[in-house]
Image (cartoon, rainbow, N blue to C red; front, side, top):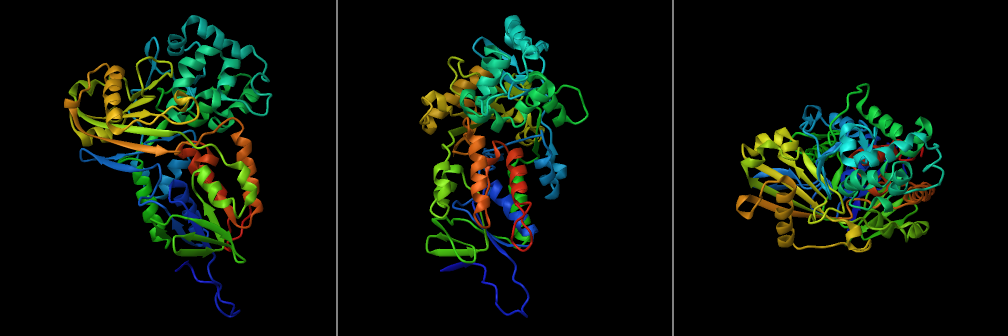
Length: 493
């Protein structure tokens, strides 16, 4: 069977056919890429292997509540996601979290996460909340940062989050503030992550402003705009009333209105170059187009393209970690007081806790609390730290084991017993490789991938493994990568 759009006619008197484009992958980056291409005048087909659109911006129904099963907020360090939401008619749905702030569970007990941090790195080591977490000696060591030369931690071509923080602010900042945040956001040891990928511009900010603390303060100031008032930790994000999954619904509706062909259950088995462009084979179907966009995770993207673009073969990234999310809907009025604000991150060395983070969703989002009703609470616990499995494989627990761990961890973290008898409903969602693993040196690999794809004719590769973790990074990068595509299907990039 032949799919896609018809070949342009050779009759010079006939109107020029619209350029065609294929997007492989119907996650958030694939949908955004399709929208950019359609807006530029291309006839677009999106091929998605699964049955649902949006990738890790998913949804599920638990206890009758329509909840996010993946991403549930977006960073406000840029306006990328908010701009997209407004374009899709969702401006009135953008909401800030409840101002209760987040906590961190340390080996010596829980503490409120300090204000004005990036990856947990403080802007002021002597802020009372920071000093409470670090202790006097930790705050003194962290304050050495302001007297170190700007070259400390910035002179090497690549460096890890851990190496930068240790060099500039010391071990306590790393272990008590940075490790919990990085573990909660990236499911990884900060010693393994490239700081330039997970905190773009931070090292350059040290050279500009003279210290790591000043660089953090500058990034946070830029995110807040002109306001200089500190914000609670965990509040430098926003969400959408109804959940982030409503962004996917709006994107899909927008694409259909633009005439984009959306084909689910179409797994791309092979990609080949043709004289006219690209051919994608899915089962017994083939699709031809002038331009190809591959919006898959890193290993899958390289695996699909390496036969046609062999230069990519040596640039395959490591797979991201397996993350398991346990959602509990509980009838527990004792949680009405938000004992740990909007949620709590867990330092890796904290004994007795298997979760890396707990989000108290009904404490974080007022719209969800209204939907759930008095005394009903939504808790989401996240599991999956690669370093716990020796840095190679992932730790995999079955659903019942995850439920047992979630009840035990929630009780310990929230200081309120959470038992099976309190559960109204629960669900487990697993995301394999959804979080890109930005290992040290990954930024250089990304640059090489982009160079190889630029050299190939009418090929773009997008997604979190190239853009960095988080919706803000993915939305901005995907739009930037497709911005140079002209209506005739060629590119300025």
